[in-house]
Image (cartoon, rainbow, N blue to C red; front, side):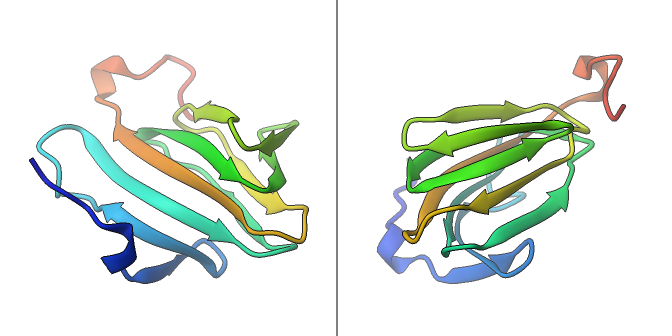
Length: 121
C-alpha cells in the first residue's frame, strides 16, 4: 500500500504554465500506469494542444467549467465529466470561468500489440 497526501505534494508546472500536483510519476508504478496528476487551471488559462502516441489519458473533472478540444471537436467540461483520450488524439483544455478548473489525469501506457490500427492518425 502507498498513501498519498495531496497537501504534502508540491506543485509543478506542465503544458503552458498549468499547475499540477504529480501524485504518481513515470516509473513509480509496477503496472503500465504512467502518471496521475491533480491539475489546477486559473481563469482564462489554456493547456496547449498536445498528444500522447503511447498512452491513453483519462480526465476526471472535479471543479469549474471549461472546454476541451479533442481533434476537431469541442466538448464542454465541468464537475462529474470524464473523458478518455485515445493514443494520438490531439487535445487541449481551456478554463472558461472565473473559478479554478480542477481535474485529475491518469495516463496508462499502451502496448504496441494493444494499440488500435488508427493510433496517431
